[in-house]
Image 1 (cartoon, rainbow, N blue to C red):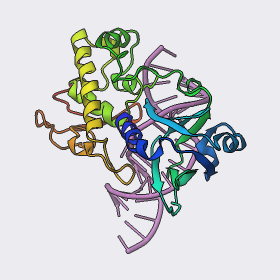
Image 2 (image 1 turned 135 degrees about the horizontal axis):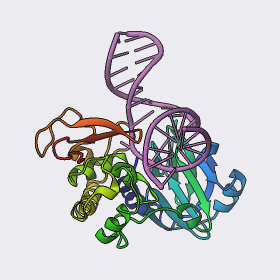
Image 3 (image 1 turned 180 degrees about the vertical axis):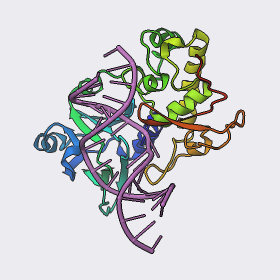
Amino acid sequence: MPELPEVETFARNLHPALIGKTILASELLWQRTLASPSKKAFTHRIKSQRISAIGRRAKYLVLTLTDYVLLMHLRMSGDVLAVLGGYQKGKHDRLILHLSEDTKLVFSDPRKFGRIWLVRDPDEVLRGLGPEPLGDEFTAEWLVENLHTRSRQLKMLLMDQSFIAGLGNIYTDEILHAARLHPMTKSDAISNLQAGHLWQAIRIVLEDGIRRSGASIDWVYRGGDFQNHFRVYGRSEQPCPVCGTAIRKITVGQRGTHYCPTCQPLEA
DNA sequence: CACGAGACCTGTTCGC
DNA sequence: TGCGAACAGGTCTCGT
C-alpha cells in the first residue's frame, strides 16, 4: 500500500503521540511480522526502550529508541496507529506495543506482508537502498548519469528500491505521465532533456502527494486526498486530463501500468 | 544483466 | 444471489 508520501504522512502524524514515551511491553500476534530478531530477543530488548524520534527512510518507518532502532515496512496493506486510552484489539493486529501514558502503538496488516525489525544499526536493513528522491543527493545530474548505466524499462527501474528509494506503482505511473515518458522506454534511450523532465516530475509528484497526505484507495489507507488528483493511475479508459485520449492500462513488470498513449508515446 | 513467474497473504470487486 | 476468478499500494527468490 504505502509509498513514500503515505509513509511520510504516517511518520508526521504519529510523532506527537509517540515521542518521549516508553515501551512497557509487546504483544506479537503474527510471528512472521517480526523479521528480526527472534520473538524472545525482541520481547526482552524492546522493554523499557524510550522512543526518541520517528522518521522515514524510503518506505520504512524508523523509530529511534534508547539502544535500538525499530524499523517497520508496511508493504501492501500495513497500517500503524497510536491509540490513547482503551483499545479493542482489531482482527488484523500483528504487533501491539504497550507504551507509557496509557498509549498503544498498533501494527495492523490484513495481508501479513508487512515486516518489523529491531536492530542496533538500521543500516543492517536499509543498506542497499538508493537515494531519497527528495534528498540533496538526488540531483538531475545524478539521474541522467545513472539512467544511462543500465538498460532497463523506465517503470521497472524507478520502482527498483536500490536505484531510487520510495517510489511504488501509483507514484511511478503518475511521475511518468507528468514527465511524458512511456513506461517501457529503455533507461539508456532517454535524452538529457527528458531525464531533466523526469527528475522534476519525481520531485513535483512526490511533494504533491505529501502535501495531500498521500493517496487513500480501497479499505486500506485512509486520510489522504491524492487519489482525487490521479491523472492516470486507476483511470483506464477515462480521458487524459492533458489531451483527452483514453488512458490505457497495460502490464509492465507484472504490475498494472496506466499511461496516456498520446502524451507518452513509445519512441522507436 | 534484465526480466518473467511464483511466493507470501487476505479482502474486495468483477464476470457469468 | 452465488461463486470462482482476477486484482490490489511490495519485495524476495529462482529460472531463463
